Image (tube, rainbow, N blue to C red; front, side, top):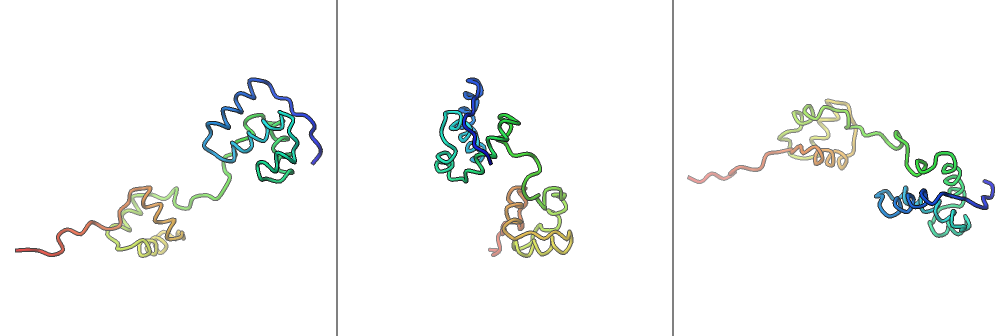
Length: 146
């Protein structure tokens, strides 16, 4: 990457970047915005890299991307990352298969066998919790008193 001596940004854009740094929940977005703001305040790329604990090459990439896309460059594009395996599966089908099963491991084995979807037990446990699927009914009076 080449040297970038100055990065001039408009006062309104600087205020918007400050707002992103203070309010955005995503660490990566805040980090990128912070790098751009610091560079616009004439801080060297090597100092920004040390402060944000990233490589200087990454700062140069963020600056170049900012010059092309503006504030939109702080955000990840759609389609990044690993796709969810259970996202497009019918929840009712899974519910019907796993209801009343004793454990996540057993339920996951049934899903693997019937739907040919292979996920880790902890991933499956999170999916069940998020979709509010309970594996087994609560024990109703297992000991009957007469």
